Amino acid sequence: MQASTSLAEKSLPAAVPATSRRRRAAGAGGTAGLKRAHYRNSRLPLLLLLPQLLILLLFFFIPAVRALVQAFVITDPFGNSVQFVWFDNFRALLASPEYRDSIWVTVWFTLTQNVLTIGVAGLLAFATDRVIRGRGLYRSVVLLPYAIAPVIAGILWAFLFNAHVGPLAYVLKALGIAWDPSLSGFDAFMLVTVAAAWKHICYDYIFLVAALLAVPPSLLEAAAVDGAGPGLRFYKIALPMIGPTVFFLVVMNFVYGFFETFAIVDAVTRGGPGGATMILVYKVYQDGFVHIDLGSSAAQSVLLMIFAVALTLLQFRYVERNVNYDV
Amino acid sequence: MIERTRGLDIACHGVLILGGLLVCVPIYFAFVVGSHTVGDVLAVPPPWLPGREFFENARTAWTKGNLGRLLFNSLVVAVGITVGKIAVSLLSAFAISYFRFRFRMVAFWLIFASLMLPVEVRILPTYEAVANVALPLQWALDALDVGRWIGALTGRTVEIGLEWNMMNSYSGLILPLIASATATFLFRQFFLTVPEELCEAARIDGASPLRFFWHVLLPLSVSNMVALSIILFLYGWNQYLWPLLFTTDKDMATAVIGLKHLIPQSDSEPAWNVAMNAALLVMLPPALVVVALQRWLVKGLVDSGK
Image 1 (cartoon, rainbow over the protein chains, first blue to last red):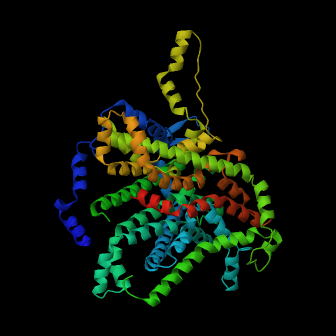
Image 2 (image 1 turned 180 degrees about the horizontal axis):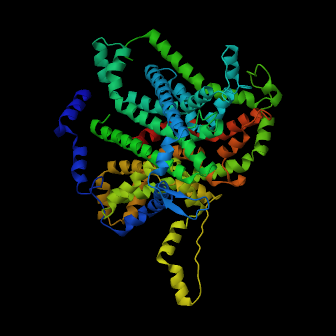
Image 3 (image 1 turned 45 degrees about the vertical axis):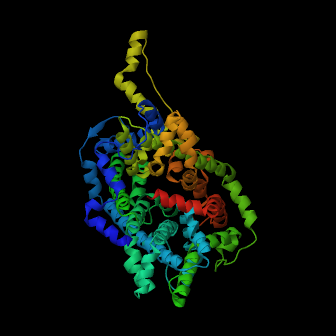
């Protein structure tokens, strides 16, 4: 029943739920998201907003604008003369083979991590939805990595895969697979990817379990009466209904892969060996903080900001969808 | 349960047990290694069962990593960030959803825009901002040439140098992180579901906005605050890049940063047993929080994703 109404809403704008229609109509007048019963007071709200806006100004907006400015200038090492060079920093950056390599590493890393995370989380969520006995216990165990800092996840896996002392590396060697993340780029890449995915599976899992729980049982029962088995029901009913959640999670996984895996790389591989794990965020830090190449680092920051803006807008689309479809 | 599917149910349990193993194996081996001597760790094949040196290693890790001090720092920072974020975003959400004023939408979009600027993309300029928080004020003074004005008035040459360095301080570790678009939106979404009648009734009874906030809205928000504070505590405890940049003094680092210095970087001094023991110690507080308050954590996560 619910599925058919949400389909109707998609095709007929008139059938959008009253709340969102009201909100959109009010958007033009500047009262979007305002309570009907509200206060008209001009000083108090500004005072209430002051702490947040002050922090944003000092630590978010001014630094962002400075990064933007720095990306278009060249400063000499002593900071005395500043020269405006238009897009030279960007041109140099995109021409440098290290940066291109870093882009590819980031692309492969975020994609592999995304597929691993969502795949394993989806499998576990589907299984959790099916079982009755022990559900709480399974859930607690799978949730555990949520408590663990990315850097600790990195350390745990770095040990397991350490060529000299790691138990998993020992098993791999016993199976005849040469393995050393401190020498082989591919091994290091796999190590970082597995650690990143391991840490993040729990996040996707929580959302997928919640989304599967929200699928109306009446729909599933109706399909079962019509002879659809558990697999078919998952594909034909549950999956389309949790679609927006999956979309949201993919975006969140990209955010995580792009930005929050900094700690894993810093603690485990430092971008090495030979740049095999040099993700973009780590390169900004390396070039800006270790090599003090301000112009290049600022240009990299700006490119990353563009990524971040794109990801945020995608995330916002999810929020909008959620309002319309009420999934 | 709709139908009986014995095979599928067993397969599901199998998948979940495998998933559980995937989570537990790294933690188990951390425990195994953390309870052996260095010699045992280096043995081939590596030890598969826990040894007896756990507390000895814990003692070494505690002193070598200065963990007493660092765990205290982590606690202060995590609690500070949690309380700060919740306070700041409650106030902002209240202002945005309960007041009509001229810059309401501007404020809303400014807060929203901050989502697009994670620390990682503005590392260097933010570092400068924390190294001297008064820098923007200095620019203003320079631009207005305040120094010369005062000089002209008093007849002396005056140079105004403002400096407020937040490096290596709790305020530097906490303050810049307490702005939160996510938390603000969470509370705003919640306020939108609060019945209009409550505010109307409060106004008829002559309650001031702040009184309404304190006595009506705040008590209603408690469950949201609890759910969110768990996420924020974990976020604060597990911070990495921020303390890495802004603590040069070893006594002001957090436990997570201290841990990084314990990892063996070369094969000459492979003290993995101490490092893994310390890792267990550092992840213990947040792990306890997750296990004990799981239901709230799930609620908070799912709510803040909306």
